[in-house]
Amino acid sequence: MSGFIVSAPASSANLGSGFDSVGIGIEIRMTARVRVLDPGATSSWTYSGLHAPTHDGVRGCVEAGIVRIAPAAPALAVELQNDIPLGAGLGSSAAAFAIGVAIGARLVEGPPDDDLLAHAVAELEGHPDNALAAWYGGSIVAALGDDGLIALRFPPLDAIPVVVVPEIVLPTSDARALLPRAYKRADAVHNIQRAAVLGAAIASGRLDVLRATARDRIHQPYRANAIPGLRAILALDDADIVAVMLSGAGPAVLALARRDGARIGALIAETFARAGVRSQVLIPSLARQGIAVRLGEAA
Image 1 (cartoon, one colour):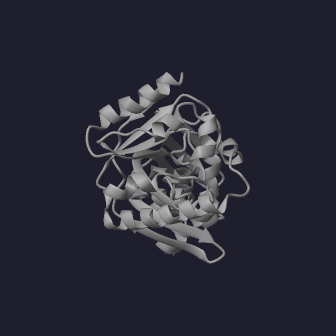
Image 2 (image 1 turned 135 degrees about the vertical axis):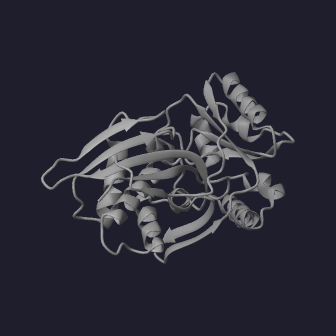
Image 3 (image 1 turned 90 degrees about the vertical axis):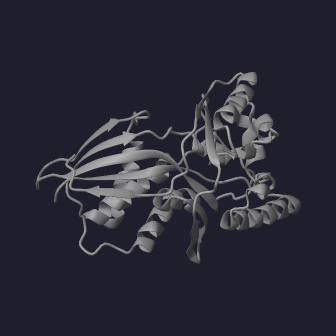
C-alpha cells in the first residue's frame, strides 16, 4: 500500500445553548502522513506543526480510532502535523479520533460505510457535536445515546469565525467538573427553547436569531468562574457580532461576525487583557469539508 495523507478540521462545539449537541467545523487542521511498514517493523511517530503534541495523548486518540476499525492494523510510520490549539476547546481530540478512524478504514478490506465510521468517531469522542464537525465539517446538530446517533449536517453559516485563545490552562476534565449535577427547571426550559431555535436557525441560515440562542444557562455561566473576562466577553454588544460564545469546554472563545473579523478579535482580546489575560486571535474560515484523504503520497 502506498502512503496516504489524512486530515481533519478543528471544531467548536457546545455552541451557546446547544450543549453537547451543536458544533461547527473550523478550518484549522490536524494532518497525518501515513505509510504502512513491513511485517515485523515497529510503528514510528513524529510530531510537528504550530501546536505539535508534547506527549502521546493525541497519538493515543489516533491509535484508538485505528484499532476501532482495524484491530489487526500493521505497523505504521506516522508524521502527525497539528495546527489546532491543544486544550483550548477546539476539538483536537475529536480531530485525532476522526483521523484514526479514517486511517483504520484504509487498512481493512470492505470498510464500514460512512455513517458507521461517523458513529465510531462519536462514540470514541463521547460528544457527537465535536466528533461529527471533525468528520463531516459544516454545521452539526446531533444527539448520541441509548437510541443511537441522530445527526444532521448543514452547510457552514454565512459568518466569519473569530477564535480567541486565552493564555490560561483549563483542562477539559476541570471544565466539566465545574458544572452542577442538577439544574433549576427554569434554566433547563430556557436552554431547551433556545437550543431548538438554534437548530432551526442553523438549518435555515437565520443569523439574526443566533445572539439569543447563545444565551446559555447550562455551561457558560459556571465555566466563566474559571475564565477571567469571559462574562464581559459574552455580554459584548457590537453591530458586527452575530453571536459570541465559549468554544467547547473553553477556554477559547468563538465569535461569529458579519464583517471585520480582525476588529472583533481585537475587541475580545482587549476584554481578556482588561482581566489580566493575554490571548491569541485566529481568523480561520469555517470548514466545508471534514475528514479528507489523499492517496498515493508517501509519508
